[in-house]
Length: 111
Length: 111
Image (cartoon, rainbow over all chains, first blue to last red; front, side, top):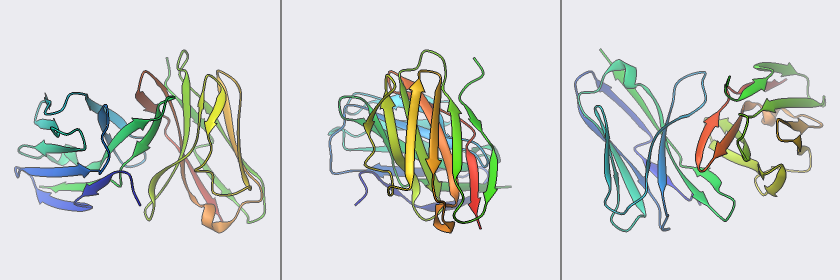
């Protein structure tokens, strides 16, 4: 079983549309991270959320940490082709910060 | 800093051969992670080190895989003997206080 389940697995939308992707778990975490990975590259950190209910905005991207700190969402407003990529959530567990990633959502934004 | 540096970027080898992947983490980072990424299984944590010490190798698929970190600036992941099912992109990442920085990965093809 996966520690972090992301949905949807794949999403293909047109430029200008809005979308939300989800990261869910049955476990409680002290913090959660979102990464974006472009083809041929490694994942790059977008944001870290720490407090239950916390909302962070990064331009057109809005990240929310669930009140119970078990889940998170990423909302993109007016998607652009440059948003295309694999979106991964990740959590640190254990005393030495073992970083585990979710199953990922692959987003394609077309013109 | 040049970021996390991995070599080689691409490796094609025959089944049964030994493969060694190399990683130079970002100077000052105290954690180093080796991940394997495939379409089927996503981004899997193989092993991670904290202050050069292996902390958790439970993700290493089998005894054919081994990893070392002889000092703070170098790590290797070795597969011996390699098999076609080992074909994947292998990422090294280093971190300091939770934010992970990834290398560009090594695309391994075992034929």
